[in-house]
Length: 274
Image (cartoon, rainbow, N blue to C red):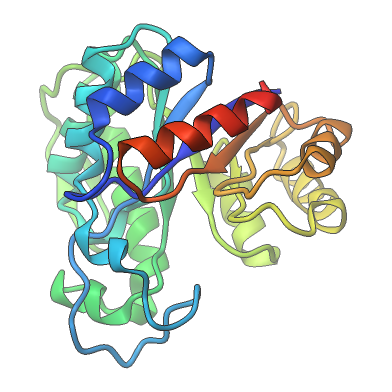
């Protein structure tokens, strides 16, 4: 099972270049980074991880810039977002960022996407909260039109793009796309419809939920099985053994949003799982 990592990189933590080099040298499989453009100082939205909201949420580096730095100093380390808040982006610009990172990294990029939790943050991007899921689906379809081999137009409920010359292209038509979110029929239907798999935060309850996801996948006529990557996991030997028993091939461990010395100590501890 591949052991990847995630961290809230900020202006107060270890730098992306240093971390990426250490991860590759130590044999870790990947680095996934979260995204928040900003955190409004006044919120009515309760933080799902509990209040007060941890300091790092309002200081998060842009994941695409940080991952580009990581790509430039590594050769094998997989790179990903966990998660990109697609509804908060211009899809034409985001499609270019993703395709460029995929190209420059040698197709090492995984696009983790999600719908978000912060109503106020989304509102500042002009997102109507009740439509964010439909908006995300629409923007993903528009981006796939830009990634198509031949110029392809798209007209959707929230946006459109002319048939266009848009290069580079992701190596496989689109990067591997994993959808984050809570288990349930709606999410599993969306994964089966248009994603490659699921990015379950924390990785709890998979014994009960995986059969439903795999059933939705099969009923949608998808071949094989969906990719499932437990994300932001606090590891124990028993937990990782359980994931292996479930047939999972990758897990993403949570690193502390800390300065270099503490992060490297954590990597030393996580080495037991490699």
